[in-house]
Amino acid sequence: MAPKEIEAKKRRTRSDYVFHQEYRTRWFDNDMYAHLNNTVYTMLFDSIINTWLINECGMDPFSLNNKDHSSSTPKAAEQVGIIVTSFCDYFASVAFPDVLELGLRVSKLGSSSANYEVGVFKKGEEAVKVVGGYTHVFVARDTMRPTKAGMEEKVRRGLEKLLVEGERGSKL
Image (cartoon, rainbow, N blue to C red):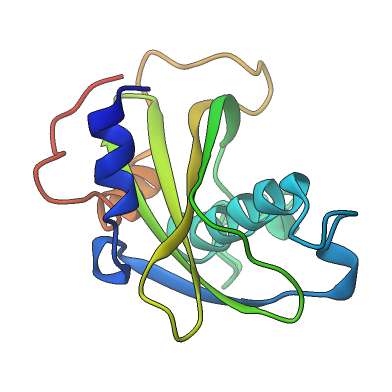
């Protein structure tokens, strides 16, 4: 990654992110070097992204078998998001018992894909500690292949709420 892009990420603030979620670290999250294990960041990214997808995009895995359209429970999305790339840029350590504030945004939205970015902040501190995320390609649940129509409209509408200004129309 170009130094200019890294510097831009280091300057991220909470206001650069649309959706926020708090995470209380656990003793179990630390590694042998007394900071959050790298795998925990992946779990944090996955948790905040899937919280949004479930609550705002209709991608609730608990309603997968809901085929009854007369039910008051909304029908689940017909697609799933498959991770095709991921990244994580570390700027400072965090560790148990820190309380973290996560921020989520979509940096690019294509016809069947979305680039997510998550900022990790320590509660009470302004400097971003980590910026990471991944790219989902939305595919048909039954074939695991992209569809000609792209992502479902409900998913797109939900993800557009996270799209940062100046990024509209970006294609993947």
